[in-house]
Image (cartoon, rainbow, N blue to C red; front, side, top):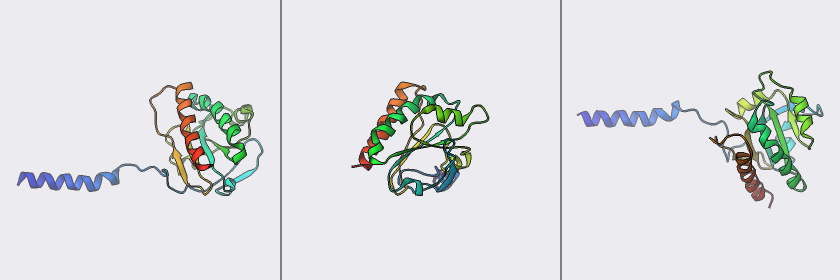
Length: 176
C-alpha cells in the first residue's frame, strides 16, 4: 500500500511541477512578440516585425550600468559591420536602467549604426529577459533563432567572444 501511495504522489508531482515552473516567453523556434518603440538617437518610431524588412536581426537588451553589456557592445559593432551587406541589423533595448545612467548618451557614444529603443522594460518583460544583456537573434520572419543562456563567466572578453561566436554561427546559417 505504501508503494502505490508513493507512486501516486510521484505521478501527481510530475503533472503539477511543470505548471509551477516559469517558462520563458520566447525560445528558439517561437515567433518573437511584436513591439514598437522610439529610437533614442533618431527619435524615429520602429515596430517589430516590420523593422526586419525580411532580414535577420540581433536583439540586445542592455543597461548603461551593466559590465557584460559594455563588454559585448564592441563585438556587436563588429557583427554589424561584418553582416551589413546581408541587411542584418543590431536592435538594442535599454531596460532595467533603474535611473542610473544616460541611455541616450551611451547609445550615441557607441558610434555605429544601430537602433536603440529607450524605456524598453515592457518589451523586456514580453521577451522574459531576466538578466542582461538579453541577447537574441531573429530571422527575417521574426522567429527566434538564438537566445543566449545564463553564464557563470565574469564580464569581459572571454564571455563576449563566446556570445560573438554563437551569434555569428546563427547569422551564418540565416544569411546563406
